[in-house]
Length: 115
Image (cartoon, rainbow, N blue to C red; front, side, top):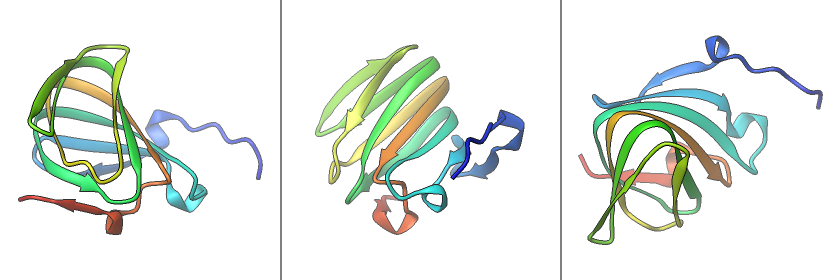
């Protein structure tokens, strides 16, 4: 495998829901150990769980409210929250740009969510 420059303009754009758009940089197809996307989040991203993967939501700019296990926390720029596998989490973004690191790599079959 060779080194590859990944520019933001080259990332695959994936609308997830009304509040979140994901920009895919490093996916399961590149290797199953980890995946990396950035996301623009402005509003409510529904309650969801990854059954096998740990996720780190790292806030680049804006604010992110994280609601998990009945506890609400606010995360600002250059801070993050780690969500263990099997943990339900709801995110509320306020003009947030977030890096999401998922290990093992994100697989849609691994995720359940409430509508």
